[in-house]
Length: 120
Image (cartoon, rainbow, N blue to C red; front, side, top):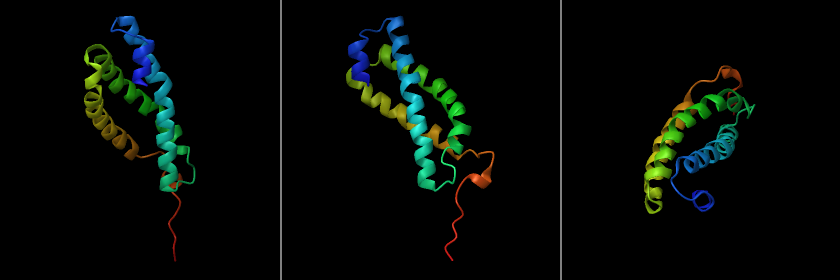
């Protein structure tokens, strides 16, 4: 996506950076967060695979905006393209830890969280 953004919106002008930030955060992020929560619920065997998504999408998206908008602003403004992989790798590692913490926060109705594991 970054190559496309750099080709389509070339430069480090304030308006260009704002366009890149908005496209990155508001087009790609909701899809990725949805895939994360639904995918994790499927792997955990939840009865309602959309429960956690419904409860955590907005708070996670807000955290994502608080973290990624400044990170990406620095990325698009200061980081040279050849160093973006390193920069984004470090930032991605930090974000995954934030995402794991958010994932582990309790949901309101714990009885719907996972299917009972009865194997007797």
